[in-house]
Length: 79
Image 1 (spheres, rainbow, N blue to C red):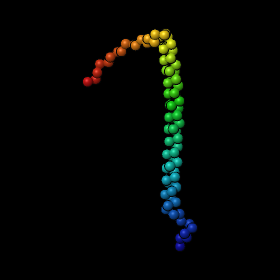
Image 2 (cartoon, rainbow, N blue to C red; image 1 turned 90 degrees about the vertical axis):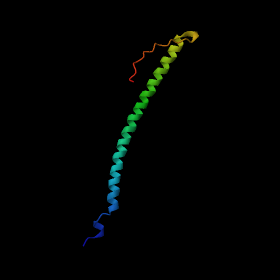
Image 3 (cartoon, helix red, strand yellow; image 1 turned 45 degrees about the horizontal axis):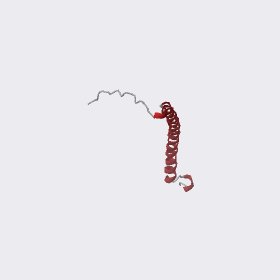
Image 4 (cartoon, rainbow, N blue to C red; image 1 turned 90 degrees about the horizontal axis):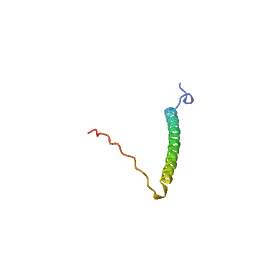
């Protein structure tokens, strides 16, 4: 005779399995979030440096506000 106290309901097995899968997914998503945060911080630093360089170029252009455009090198098209 099987006593009801000794058996585990199927829903409990399902919930345990689902919880394990969700925990693994959460770990992966947190790692991805941390990588993305790091990427954003790096991009913010790059934008800041570019803004400073842009300001320096504008100041170097003098009161005329003339900025020289660099020549464009055309690449042959792949068509």
